[in-house]
Length: 198
Picture 1 (cartoon, rainbow, N blue to C red):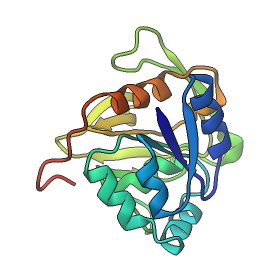
Picture 2 (picture 1 turned 120 degrees about the horizontal axis):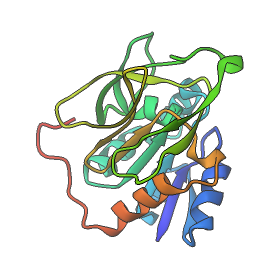
Picture 3 (picture 1 turned 180 degrees about the vertical axis):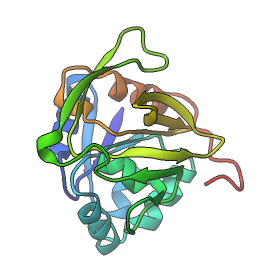
């Protein structure tokens, strides 16, 4: 399986290591043509505004939207979740708008208020140790979005069809279950989003 990692900014190298630790090939994605080479995609954490601006500069926003809407499995972590979403509580920046959710940036505070927590994830047998660094959270979701985990009553992990979005950093731990979930999605038959869906 070939898993792409959007390599514009942020901790894409750590995601590549996680994918390779599971025995799969990881590829850096920067240009539209790179998307044709991958079976799934990770959009990593980093600075969401920088990732969004570089995506515009590299001309990859519309190709990303097209591939994801056509069923390309994608995992967005932290800033990646922000980039996937359809709106922001605080300010504005380019977003893909493929995830029917509104996101609040830095919802848990600044860098020195980063924390770890054991989360109960829907579908996982055991809790997952989650690392939150200047993390966002979701304030509102559409009817097609399944909430997988919450912190303080707000979603921090969701799934909408072929889209996984989480507010934390699984690449910073040895728990690869979200990467495995993405790879499992890539192995399944892809179903494009229905007409009218985000």
